[in-house]
Amino acid sequence: MKIVGVGQGPFPMKAFLKKMVKDKVRPMKIRDALLYPMGGMQMTFLDDSTILFGDNSAMHGALDARDGLAQRLDSNPQVSDLMSSVDSNPIWSVLDQEGTQNMMRSTLAKQPSWRTMKL
Amino acid sequence: MAAGLAQMVAGMSRGKKAYLQYEAQLSEAIASLSSLREELKASIDADAEAYNQVMKAYKAARENPEGGNAASSGAAIDAALKQATLVPLAVAERAAEVGRIAASLGAVSNPNMKSDLTTAGALARAAVEGALANVEINLESLKDQGFAADVRKRAGGREAIGRHFCLFRGRGTQPSTQAFGHVPRCPSVLTSSSPFQRTIVQEQVTLSVPSASKFLSPYKRFVMRKFVRSTVAFSLVWLLAASGWSLPMGTAARSVVPMDVQQIISVDYRAVHNSPPAMALRNKLLPENLKAFETALKSAGIDPDRDLDQLTFVSFRVPKKA
Picture: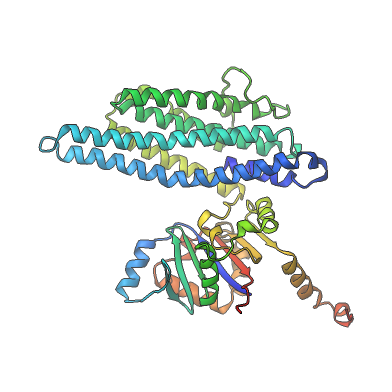
């Protein structure tokens, strides 16, 4: 399982890139994306108002989807349909079937009655 | 915002027992609104860029009034103005389409969300009127009258559609599906007393005063437009802050989500930032690696407290390689 973060906002991209050049930070390149090391993680600008961050392998997975080397969210109607019904809320989350099962397991496992059950 | 509201209404009605017969219509509306929303968002940058090009053309003509070729300066200004006209014209057309879809949802969605459709209709209508006012102000400065006549003809249809969104205001009635019937122009939000709606009214009045603009040079008209745009933007931010309505994931953000996604968590960071208990919880629960990332970002000139609007985490499976 890989995790990436996506931040959206009015980021000062030009100032950031200038600072990277000034500090002689050398970015790693994945196709046309420049990945900058940032506090043990990597980050890149998807456009001037969107950043993507995560560990190296997660970044590869996400950028593969963006560049068409892996299938994207659009090919997953189960999750994308769920998103369209909640994504205007201030805080939201969607899970697929496996994610829901994992969450239930991790929640119920904390209950003593669940721990004693053998499935 | 109009598209987002209408999409929310369609999304919350789709799949519900009472509206199963409208499943196809609701799905189609959701898909169209989603695409229109993205296109309208992209128009923000396109409009800003077109505006910059017009400013550049005027500046070049001002800085070199005699030395340069007057004909080529005029052509450059005309070309930039044409582009600056076509962008808001496309916005008006898309906003009209959003209004049309929102109108059609009235009869096939949950009536408890009627007020959201009313708001969507009012916002779409304001967008049509504002965009057409921008089209008109640019046409006034254009020398190519053939182009101006074509655009006015195209805009006429959109204006007619925009006028009928006022049917959504309710007055205790169900939203009508007869959105394109011939009804007289009504004052829409002009009669409203809420502070936000008053602000919108002010924008509409400012945007639709051609007589005032006639006294100004084209350059000053563009400076005025810049001021009006800032005020409109301020009003929209006010509405967002007040309603707690969040912006959905952008196109760039969605593009990096792989098909094998397991979970997506999204937080409107501005809303969280304004809540002390939420911030305290965030500080307590934020993992060490994210704290280190945040510190590094700050040292590189990006301050999440200042620059971050929306934060989304995506967990996904990676196929095992052979």
